Length: 499
Image (tube, rainbow, N blue to C red; front, top):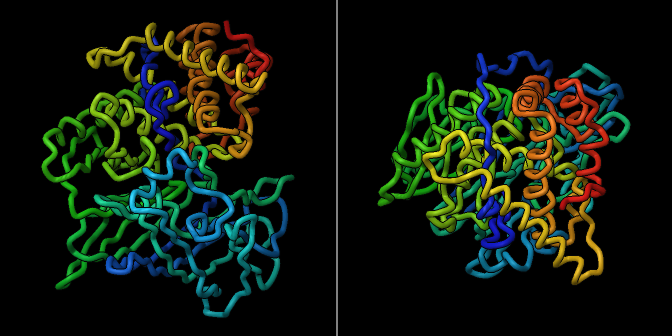
């Protein structure tokens, strides 16, 4: 997702693009089906359009894959970031009007009950830094390699907002709407950081999903996972979706959707545009070209469906498993670029995950760099690597000069939490732009063949897992037979000299 800042500091870095590189890959790697014990979510959802509310019963099969026993388990409550009185704002002041065109609006999530599967009530607490965490107290300790099933009943209200979670003029975006398990890291505990306006403040493990959704029949629905069945009565439609080994689940509803599709082997790519759009099939085919190119460069897209969805959204785009949002405010000249970037996230965030709050440079840097690779591989779209890398370097150096002039100094470190970036331009320049420059430098240092092999090895080794900075460095070093720790750390710690 990200902030689409139009000129010098763009979410999609207008004016930057592409890497000169073509590498012949003898086969397309497909991630292993083996992932071990993972959580499962079963949700029964009912959307009320008159009140813009969601009611849900969510059954979670939760595995303790750690080395410690748990007396409680924890879930993120992201919709509470939209509630009145939230201390952390969902957008910066610069983006407020675009996010809330009709004035500030509020939403929230209310947990009505938590039970064991057999129906016994469980104690729960709402806490965290900003009422952003659900703590479920277990009746007995949950030991390593054990599982527990909990049933969470909740209702939520959508704000009138052009955001991940909210309704606007054209679409109803239902992202990050349900309690999702906090990641537990041995030695650190559960990750419980709240929402933040910078970047994508999300961190999750892959899980299996079964979702039943009932909506008024006037809506066309785009989703994560794949649609299995549907049934209809006089006024409503009930859809059933499933998703295996995906790390989140998103829904988008609209009365205005028209759909065009293309097929790449076993993968169907759907483009959801608005009624009256003249380029539906063109956009579907472009999205298909993105999937085809990234398959060749990194390894196969492991799911059967990808939905590219035009939506009212404050930023340029946003990635979810099997679904990406493309803002309907993006200009025609930048639209394909945003599609290419967001689809790249299916590889870097979707399959290879990361803590986007703590290490945003990894998935954003890789997705942005992959976008450069896409246009390098497809020169018919008219973007040239040398010019775009030059523009990226100029943008970054301009940012540093401005910050030094205003503040006397500038922190150019990349590997820091979202709440430690003072402004959105700082976040964009140090995760997107400097991320591109870092990977470009690695390519020049290693040569194209070794560099591309390292990306493929990264995708293969960490498919369906989460990666941190140290693990990325170790994988690149192992794959290439070079000790790259000092080089990469000089970039992410801010000590490298960029001339």
